[in-house]
Length: 157
Image (cartoon, rainbow, N blue to C red; front, side):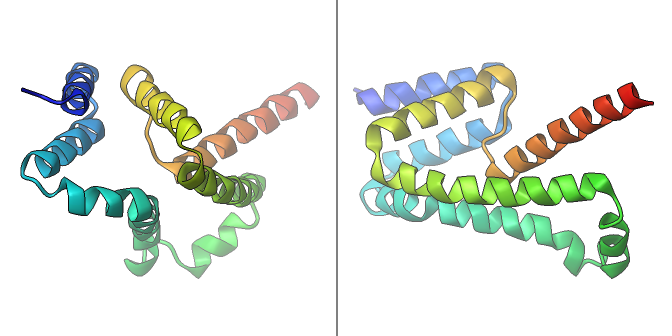
C-alpha cells in the first residue's frame, strides 16, 4: 500500500509530532502531499538541486528584514563595531559562510555522506530541539566564542 519512502516519512512525521517540531512536521507533510498528488517527479529534482539555495535566500530575506524596516541602521552598525562580541560574530559569520560553501558542494556530490548528514540533522532537530538552518550555526559558534571570552575575562579580573 505505502512505499518504503512513505513509511519512512510517516515515521519521521510521528517523531516530529512527538518532539513538537513544527518545521519538521510542515516539511514532511509538504513532501508527502507533493508525492501523493503525483507532482514528485517534477518537483523533487528541483528541490534537490535548488532547495538549499532557495532556503538560504529565504533566510537571507529574514535576516535583512530588520534593515528594510528601519530597526537596524547605520547607528546600530556603528555601535556594533565597537563591541568585541560584534567582531566575534563577524568572524563567525565569515567562518560559517566559508564552511557552508564546501558543505553545499558536498551535499550535491556525495550521496552517501549526504544521507548521513541529513539523518544527523533529522536526529538533531527531533531529539535535541535543533534547527536545520545554517546561519544559526554561525550564531551558535559566535555565542560559544563569546562565552569563552567572557569566561577568560572573568578569570583575569
